Length: 253
Image 1: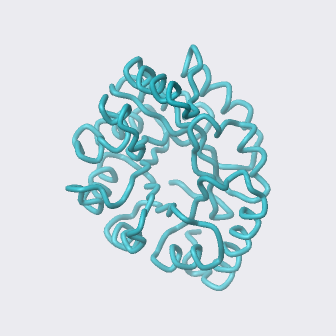
Image 2 (image 1 turned 120 degrees about the horizontal axis):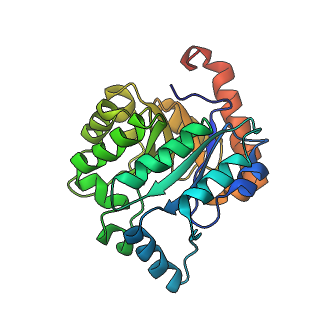
C-alpha cells in the first residue's frame, strides 16, 4: 500500500530530480519521485537526442547504479521516495524495481513523457496506447517486489484513462500519478473507478488548485516545475494540511 504524509509529492523533472533536489523539498513534502531516467540502450539513445536539443537528462554510465546511489542518499529521509523510469524493454524495469525495493522505494513507470524521441522507441506516452505492454511493465516491477506507480497523462487521443487505470491496477500497480492537463475532472473518474492511490498533478500552485484536485477525490497532489520553489511548496503544503484537517474522514488510516 502506498501512503505518505503530508499528502504532497514532488514530481520528477528529467535531469533535475535527484537526491539533493528531494532533500531541498523534504520539509514540505511527504513523497518525492526522482528521475526520470532512461534504463535501456534504446531509451538512452532517445535521451541523448533530447540532450542534443538542449533538454536536461540523467545519462550516467550505469543507470541502475545511479538509481541505487541516489536512493541510498535518502535512506534516512522521512520522504516516501520513488524513481520514475523509462525503458523500451521490460527486463530493465524489473531490475530497477529490485533496486527500488531494496530501499523501500516506489518504482514509477513513465507512461507520461510526450517527447517525440522517447515515444518513437516505445517509451512515455506511447505506453498509454499499448496497454498490454504497459501492464507487462507494471507486472514485472510488482513481481520484483516494488510498490509500483504509473505516471500518466490525460487528454491523449484514443486513450480511455479510466480503463487504463483499471488495467494497471489489475497488473499490480498501487498508485497512479495523473497529469490531468486541462481535464481536471478525470481525477474523479479514476478515483471512483479504482482503489489506486491517486496523486493529482498539473498546475498545483495554490489553495484553489489543491482544493480542486482533492475535492475530485485525489489522495494527494504533486508539484512539478516549481518543486524547487519554497514559496510555492509552503503555500501548497499549507493548503494540503488545511484540507485534511477539515476532511479527516478522507485520510486513509
